[in-house]
Length: 268
Ligand code: ATP
Image (tube, rainbow, N blue to C red; front, top):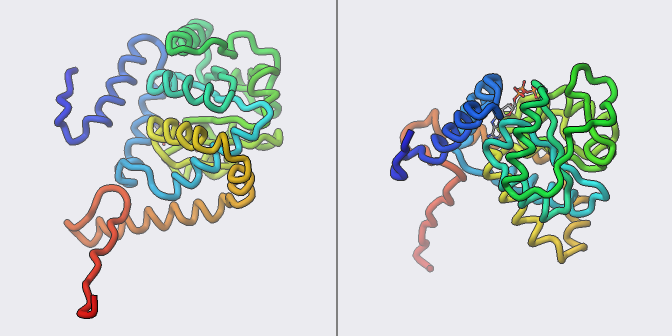
């Protein structure tokens, strides 16, 4: 479908188109389309922009990744369909490995996703030949690579399910999730939950990583000062502000709060 650039929800519709294309190509499964719908609903409430608390989490995530010994980014079908190029760029910036891990795993689908990532510029993609299992995780989702997710100290899990996030945290890893649903078990369990849309979060984290690379003191400061509970509290306060605005009527604004107009005092 051709979507005119002037359409008010152009970006969101383009993402949908990418997923449908991914489904036609056998990269995305129908369950992935449903998961995307859930994400869209939360993004609507969030105003389809990155909130200030999400930016804080993204900057902290970049710091943890830059300091990691063995960082890895986990990729599933939706992530490959929506953001293959962004994943590859981000992985290069933070020197992270890339591993494909699928809930609905078939060899054909694995190969297609690896091919998509290679076409997007990845030189080495793990996942096709797993040689380890994530403990206490049923099904083929537990399959992983020692040189990838299994042996990683910091793992980015975009659009992940709660069980696997929890299992990775249990292994002692720093788990960075990207999930628009702040109530999901993934967001609740991750070490650093990034509550933002994937195609906004990845370039944001990449930009932060580029800026931070030459500033080890700031990296250390961010790692020390990040508090998940405080960050989530701020995120829920943002949501509360959004919903209050919606409740109060048409002066609702999309995105971040507008600064109140300054009233000049006679002495100004
Ligand atoms: P959990 O097991 O963590 O409670 P879940 O059962 O919702 O979560 P999935 O069905 O795997 O897990 O859903 C993946 C999550 O990804 C959903 O919470 C959805 O909000 C989120 N999501 C979907 N699309 C995007 C996107 N483009 N950007 C960010 N998050 C997204």
